[in-house]
Image 1 (tube, helix red, strand yellow):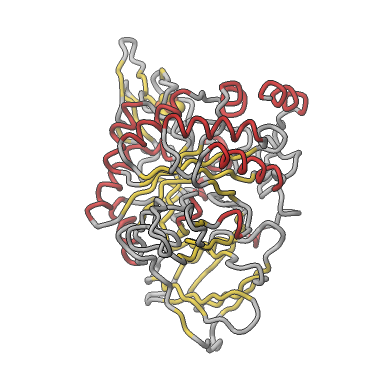
Image 2 (cartoon, protein in one colour):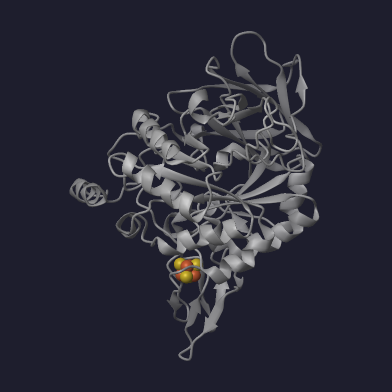
Length: 485
Ligand code: SF4
């Protein structure tokens, strides 16, 4: 399937007199001539009309958990169906999904066709309550997001939107009624940072956050702290001050550890002590909930009652367990409002069995290595009857096997993740009719495209495929760090 072959009319079009069109979806407002595409590469001008090339086309649909999206205060531990498309209206030098977010690197093998009804049916079949629009950036998938989100709502599902929110007011106005939860990735509070590292600019993002907050939506903010550029207390302080001024102290902030990627490979992951110092500053300023992301440590990611310090939700990596919240999201011990929304469904648990008869099953295992503590399992049932995949952690004792059952001919992808420090890896077994690949997930919301069978990154620092082009020059990095200090 060549994703560029078909298209349909897009929203937010302005026709211009010379036959070109202007796109009002993102603040770039690209003016696009006949036969050309805008900056994102997935919206263009055909016969004088603004079109989208990606309606119903995206990367493989994937079951994950809501913590993957830097959402900690909405239905902790619940499963989501993650939907990522291709293209992006930004081009961040450190993008961890550059292989699918930058249209010129997209390969047809990574693009799958889908329909709104098919997505809703898949969520219901697997007992998942939330659709998550994520990975590259859902802004450039606008029409498909809205059409599917409407259908999902009717079926009782909620919609989560994880985005840099570089979007116009009018586009957000179209989107807002259909989305329940926003995870906004704020790159920085600095205009120079935005211009030099993301190709976007700051003001529309701040305005979008305010528009979302004022509409009463569930909102959490995350900030990727780039090593030696923005992993400092001053950066966290500026973000905290803005949240307190324009939003509210109850809005959770996630300070996220970065892994080297794309044009920023020649560096290290963000040192954890810098993240911890940044967190302390944001808390001292008055934010109630500040978490570290991509740091698998209970203290940095768990939620505690602000009044009596009772542990409310314990987290390790992407695993979350509710400990002391009532149905209204209040602390069970003292009744303090801890600003949790538990959603309309309790997290559903996968089916489990005690013992497995391995006869006829194919088996495999994976050992966690360094900072890689999640994998995607992509599986296709080639048979004409339902077939099951079994998995369990490798740890002390004999934990129960959990199961995922696929319909005849169904293709499915789901995340498995380390849920406590003692686990060393995974065991997986599947029916003979299932063809399966594993993909190493470097950090949350990373969509890997190279299966382990085709190659393994040399360490846990830069994911495959490695970008072979020019790197962001060190002298520019120092200059930028200086300008930001
Ligand atoms: S969505 Fe794409 S075409 Fe439209 S303004 Fe943004 S970058 Fe340009």
